[in-house]
Every structure is written in structure tokens, then in C-alpha cells.
Length: 611
Image (tube, one colour):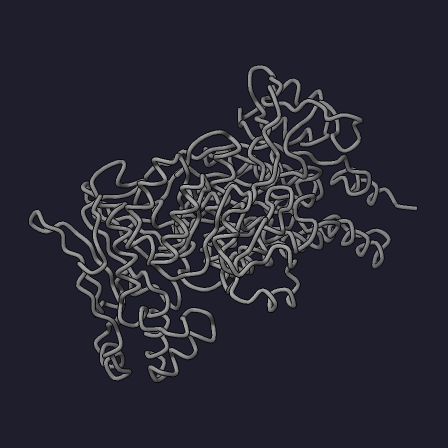
């Protein structure tokens, strides 16, 4: 028999017999610039608080999907606060462990033990975000000053250090917090009770003036449980406070709803990957007028190399949303042995494009032949996603023109900056005011090599290490001679300065003539060497260069290490905006490519055009 404290704990966080969670979606793509004149600041926009509970994070294998959900908002230049629960049944298991040790454990000890579940999820999510190259910070309740009052196992939040949270978001676009836990005035661990993670998210959102999205295991709040109903029940598009409370604690617990109502904190309930959901906190409830099409997006994949394989795995992880209809590879037999269905594989990319599909994702590289393939796909009414900076730099104007005429979508975010949303940031700023200068480290390979030279490696050994880690191609010439950076600069010149600039018009010098001694001498002077791409207006003319530069070790671009990229955009108001992230490697590039895939799926499902 469970003693009274154990029963109270179960009632508080609802471990056994919990009602099935449901979800809804919120589409907030609004962008807002923040910046300070004569200062370098992170590009920032609206803040969104995303909560992922145990029904979503049932196992660590769900982490990649959560990372992609976070990234698709980072890609739109939002700052994100992520609130997480313990994985799956971890809280229940920890509670059982407490009672295996003590018949009457103290509430403070139970709280201290159970909070380790959230801490574990945070650490695992941090590893997954780091692998994807997404800058982020981890913050516990003490760091953000989340002070509570009341019983250790059913406390209520009373204060939050907003300045600490804002400071973290100024350093990185994502901050990860534990749901469900806080600390009291004595610094002791406390729990926020049943529905505590939702309450944490809503409380933080209310203090930041942020959107709040609660991710559950279905795509909205329904009139009854879709999993047990004989026919699909109606989904609420909007839900009033009164109806939300009347539904009972089916989706969001009363404690969280009552707080939201009291503070007029609207929130959305949605599912990872969903394009619709339920907005809670409206004056009156409204049913969805019809189902948004749930047909999977049919994808043809060109290439199954380092990046292509990563994209393929992302697509296969969401069979409800994506169907791979064909894959073009050089050697089908090798991939069949690796477990890829033979029916998907073809050595003819033209045949793959001709298969019934909605989207072509290009991961094969090359330029002239690849440009012809992408043109054919666009003319065949296929949307296109590519990370191919060579193609976009030389043929982007032609492909964009064809896409406009055909009414198809062409996206290539991963072509510059990897997971850093450089193109989106530059495009957004250029739409608001004139961009005067773009300057950045946009080649992760050379940055990695320069860093290893600074540590004493030879140039050749540094290149070989970069190749072994997947940062450099078998032939690294385009990287070390600066051509890769020139391609990317040409793309940024178009989106930021409105220029159709050929890469051949860019003055280009690489790092192949630099030696370890050059790097060592720079260090003695308090400097570092970076390969910097710059495009700017000078005396009414455009100057575009790629060249090694000696920078003070305090310069923002000197703080970019390894395969990281960073770009500074100077606008006519004098502000210098920074966007940074990992720009090379399988996982960051695949994450960025799949981010574009998600944008296209969302825009198609909602019937809007997002190029």
C-alpha cells in the first residue's frame, strides 16, 4: 500500500492514470529586429516559449524531432525558451525509487530527487542541440531566479529573474529550462505539482511577454479523445477560458489554465510537426472549419552522401508528414546493403525527378549538371530545396526566375552558414532598411584549419583532420583558396544588397599560403587570423572580397572557433547585427536542409507561398 505522502505525490503530478495529453499548433512567423546603434548585438525577434512534456519526449530517440521543431523557429529568427519535462515515465520511476529507500521520505528529498529527471532531459537535449550546431544555454531554476512558495511538492511560482533570462537569450538564441521544478526562499528544491511544466512555461512566457506553445501528443484540443472516439471528433481552432476549464484537466491542468486566465496569457497547444492546433484564451470557442490536409509530402532525394543520409533519416523519422518516393545515387547496391529499400533507389536523377513528388531535395553537389536538374524539377512543378552554394551563386538568378514563373518554391538556407539563419536574417534586415555592409566568417573548414594551426598542427595535418571530421571535402581546394566563401558572399550580396554578383567578380585570396608561423606571430601580437568575406558599398560602388585578415583577439569574429560561422550585417541606422552557428558538418547541414523542407511543407499545407 502507498502511504499518504506517496498518494499525495501521485495526485500532485498525475503519474499513474494520467489523462492522455493533446496538442494544438500556433503559427507565429512574425519577425522583429532589435539592435543598438554602434553596437554588435544578436539578431533577435519575438520570443517564444516552447514546452515539451513527457508525452512528446517519451524517449531520447524523440530528441532529433524536438531539435528540428526548435530549429524551424530559430530559422525564422525567433529567440526560443525551451521548457522540458523528464523523459517518459522517469518521474514515476524516480518516485518509486524514493519509496524503495524510505517508507516516509521527506518532501524536500523527494523534490530534490525528482528534479534530476528534468536535469537529465536538459543535458540530453543540450547534446542533441550541440550536435545540430544550434547555439544554446542551459539554465536551472536558481540561475533564472524561479522562486516558489507553498509545499515542496505542490508549490507555486512567485518570482523570476527576467534580466538573467534575457541575458542568456542575448548570448544564444535558445535557452533550455527545467519544467516542473523551482526552489523556495531557502534555496531548497520544490516541485510545481501536477501540470507543473505547463505552469512553468506559462509563467515564464507571461514575464517575457512571449508566445507560449505547449507541445502534446495530438495536434490540438478536441471535443473528445481522438484516440478512443469511433469517428474523428471536432478540433477547437480557438478555445475560451471557460470552455478550457470545463473540459477538465484532459490536456492542460487546471492550475496552469487558471494561472493563464488570471494573467491573460494566451497559449497554443500543438504537436511536433503540426501545422495547426488550438489557441486557448479567446473570447469564444470556435471549431476548425475543416481538416488541414494530412497527406504526407512526397519527397524525391538527390544524393545519399553525408548530408543526404542525414536528411533521409529526418524524413523517415516522420512518416506521417513525409514520404520518400525516390533517391538518386551513384551506386544503388551499396545503399541497399545499408538498409535503404531498393524500390527507392535509382542511378538516374532525371528518372527520380519524374516520379510523382511534391518536393526535390538536392544533396549531390556539382554545378552545371545539377543546375539543369533543379531547373527541370522547378519546371515540372516540384518545389526545390538545396544546400548547393555553387549552383545558387552561379545560377540562382535563373532558378529564382523560373520558380517565380512556375509558382514553385526554391529554398537554399543551408547554402550559407549551415544552421545559422544567415540568409533569412540578411533578407529580413534588407526588407526593413538598407544594408550597407556584410562581413563574416562563412567557411567552417578554413576556420577549423586556422584554429588547428594555432594549436601547432601542420597545414596538411589540419586539413586531414577536417576531412576526417566531415568538415572538408576530399578535394579541399574550394575551401582553402576561398572560392567557397566567395560563392556564399555572392548569395548574401543578392539577398542583402540586391546585387547579382558573379563569384568571379569577387577578389579572392585563400589561406593556402599561410603557415603555422604566421599564426604564431599573430598570437604574439594578440591577434588571430580569420578568412573574412566582405561585401559593402564604398563611395557609391560595391566592394566584394574574400581574404585572410588579422583581427584583434577581442574582435567578435575572432571569437568564432572551429567549424562555426558568423556574419555581421551593418544597416543604415548604424546597427551591426550578428548571426552565428555551426557552418559545416553532416548534422548541422542536414538540420538546415530539413528546416527548409519543413517550411515548404507548412506553407503548402496552409496554402500560402513561402519561397
